Image 1 (cartoon, rainbow, N blue to C red):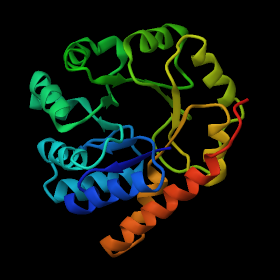
Image 2 (tube, helix red, strand yellow):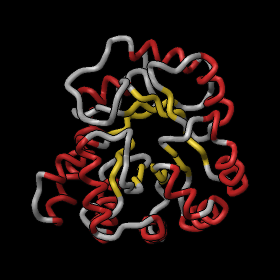
Image 3 (cartoon, one colour):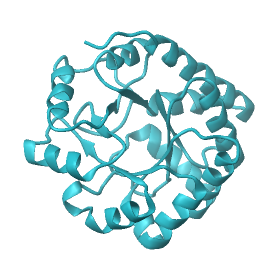
Image 4 (cartoon, rainbow, N blue to C red):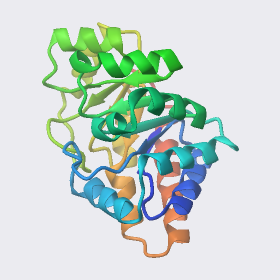
Length: 251
C-alpha cells in the first residue's frame, strides 16, 4: 500500500500529521509529492493540491524539512515524487545529499525518462538513493530493459495512458502488461494512476507488488473542511484499502 500526498497541502504541519496517520493505517511506503507549477503528468486533483501547496510557500527545502521531521519518529520508506526542474534548480549534488540526510529513500522524477537520467542517477547512486522509473502501456522492450537496468527500489507501472486521476475501471490486459515487465526485471512492480476503491486495490494486489493511490486520497481530503478531519479521513481511507489487499493471493 503506497499512498501519495502532496507536501504542504493544506500546510506543512497537517502534511506531517497525515504522513504519520498513513503509516499507522497500514501504508508500507509513502510517496511525498513535491509541488510544481506545471505538473504535466498530473490530473486536476493533484494539480489543485500543488497550487494550494505553492500558495502556502511550499518549496523543495520545506519538503525536505517535512521528510526530516517524519524520519525522527518513523522508518517507513519515503519516496520523493516530483519533476526535474525543482531538483535541477536546487543543484543535483546538493539535492541528493540533503534528501539522503533528511531520510528520503528514493526519488521518482516524473518527467525524466531513463534515457536522459544519467546526471541524476550519478548523484542518487552516490548517495545510496533509489531512482524509480515510470513505465506505461506504450513502453517498448528497449525502454523496459533500460528502466530495469537503471532503476532501483521498484518499477512504477502507469496503469493507463494519460494523467493521474481516479478511474472507475481498468483495462483487462493490465495484468498481462505487468507480467511483461516482470520478464525483464526482478525489481518489484507497483501500479498507480487511477486506483480509487478497495476492490481495485485488491485486484491490483493479485498480480502486482504495490498499489499506489494518490488522486482518490487527495479528493477525500479536499472534500473535508477541517484539517483534523482531513487527517482522520486519510487514515480511514488507507486502512480500508489495506484491509482489502491483505490476504489476496497472487495469480
